[in-house]
Length: 129
Image (cartoon, rainbow, N blue to C red; front, side, top):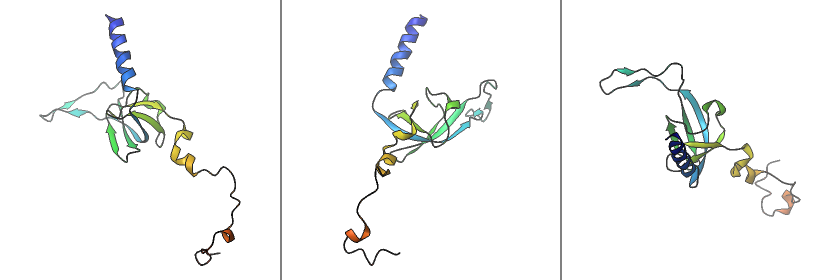
């Protein structure tokens, strides 16, 4: 029975970590508070197990609140870190290396340009020295 459950969970995990996915950055990681029932009574959570939530910002300019972070341990996540999230559920399934951000890669200069301001015509009045 446990083997069947493990196999089923691995299949679900495999589906959620496949495309489509988004790149997001972690905005904040925080401890979740006690929940309230509809009647206003508080539901106490297990104090020995600190549950964490997160706020992420996706490349599609959405800000998402995640009461369940995903399969990455919240202790490993830091604000401004890049993560891979599922496009449908926004659950975090992997940390991405910093150089993965293609927006930064495009802005890097590989070598110093050979052109000078004098080579570009018509900008003399716009250049303030």
